[in-house]
Image 1 (tube, rainbow, N blue to C red):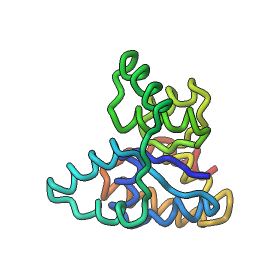
Image 2 (image 1 turned 60 degrees about the horizontal axis):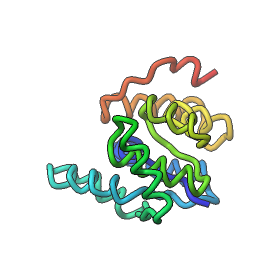
Image 3 (image 1 turned 135 degrees about the horizontal axis):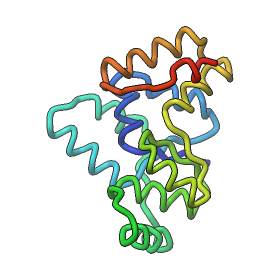
Image 4 (image 1 turned 90 degrees about the horizontal axis):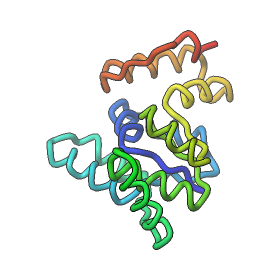
Amino acid sequence: MSIVCDTDVLSAFAKIDRLILLSELFPKHKIVTTNGVYEELIFIKHAGYDFVDRIIDVVEIISMDAKELEKYHSFLSSTSFGKGELQCISICVTRNYPFITNDKKAKRFAEKNEVIAWDIPDIMKALWKTEIRSKEEVEGIMDDLEIKDMMIINNKEKILK
């Protein structure tokens, strides 16, 4: 099985050079993304951000089939999400793949469409709950995300509880 990741999650973990965490947490899954996310990443790379190379080296790009394309177009006409998010969710709905995003609205939309969805706080909690990383290491990872990705992680205490 595969896990579909959105641009924000891939970028965040690449910026702190920790994409490996996704493979460690989901060792039996391929980490994949869509053509739309790939296009977003290439745009970021052309803007001068080299961390994108780390993503392209480890993440498989997958294409939508006709059914997924139809689902994507139905989502496009009824939501305001970006191309990358909607492609990810369309594939997840059709193939029953989990979805990782750090966009709370996209996560809720995916869940509303019966997709198992994770965000970065979920990933952080799972890393120490499964003993892949210690609480102290997870706290350091969250600090790195806040510094290098300018991410705001609310409820750190809840994540580490």
